[in-house]
Length: 514
Ligand code: FDA
Image (cartoon, rainbow, N blue to C red):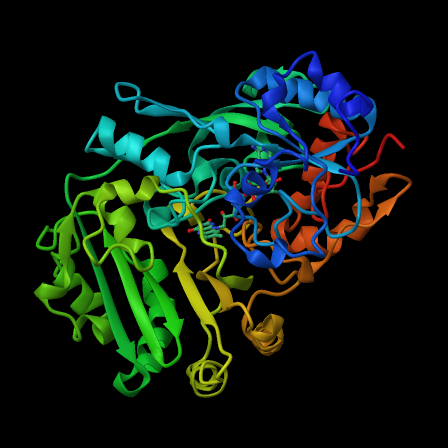
């Protein structure tokens, strides 16, 4: 192999005194490629042209993380941290431009320790959301956690970028419920909430991974869930009035009682209304004349409520609702154990981006969205997640995540293709043209985007004098973080002024010291 041997490469030599050799893989090791592949979601970033790592280090405890960072710094080897590998641009395991780097793969650091009496848990970054939910469900039928829908998403990346799912209107983001964290910084120090300082603890809760160090584990506050929740998934086609129902949904969904969450998945000519209600179907809601789920639907959201009946509502435990909402797994009777599955297939290529809507989009625009954009043969889907209630009750400076009061909903645009699909040219074109069309209807100055739906089309860092430029980073940074971008850059100055931890969209140091 053309790779340096263990004895000659300074990074490997340095590691050999602190990390067992079987935890450090070089490309000549038979398990290197399978491990690299293991958590890749998007085969776009597993191509022959992809810039791949020189080494993969798989720590089994925090001291290995510290050693990797110290050796990396000492020998000029950069590292990229990977937890669940779900980054939409693959930045946890590949680089946009040729450069030597090692991956720190945290998949062996994945324990979840639930403490029911205090309703808290410690979860390692390498755990996937399904493992966290499962451990909580095993420990108590009355506790849950508000984070994303897909059980294979990694805790490390997800929490560092915010994290939202079906409980967001009742309990906010994952990071709104983080109470402590363990971080290895660029000096290799092991820090907690108190020793890392309040600016850095603020920054790692939503300011993005891979800018401030390696978060090894997180302490979270668990949230109460009732013994039974109710779910429904009601599809409305364009000929059944989907345009009217979606138009109305924009105003209703962000203002409903916090126990009721209704998202929309719009695909081709169908809008599917997927809901989680924190109560039983016939439960009384303290809402004047509308006193149970169906009556609330009929009086608060007539357009959909009138299309519903009792048989569409299913009652189940909160943990059972987790596989229910993961596409293609729930409705067919999948067991809860399914959410522990970590295997991902490398068959689906995807391109994603996002928007925030602060003013309801006019009916005529929805008409053209359905008639023109969603009807195209290469059309993708739109996922609309309503905000309001808990997520909007937190001030926009409380955490780096600024999309709070005033946001009606988040839009995620997704387009997928398969092998032999022409490299996705048609799907990229659809997403980019549709994104341009949407400009007048969504948030502006800046046009906001959700960091966890990372999109390099929004801009990339420019490295000047071996440090990412704060000014150049504004182009993408203010879209994800609005004016929190500056405070993030100040936190970066505090913890990693030399910009050791960086990628194409990491927070640059503010550079006041330079
Ligand atoms: P990955 O390991 O790729 O890391 C992402 C970024 O964080 C990289 O820059 C990485 O270097 C950095 N990082 C990772 N671990 C770190 C650590 N321990 N310390 C410091 N930096 C670290 N989002 C959402 O809010 N709600 C949802 O419902 C979903 N659903 C969803 C489904 C599917 C199929 C995908 C592919 C993605 C989502 N997401 C989502 C988006 C998801 O939240 C986002 O991609 C996360 O960053 C993924 O975290 P991973 O740890 O899996 O990614």
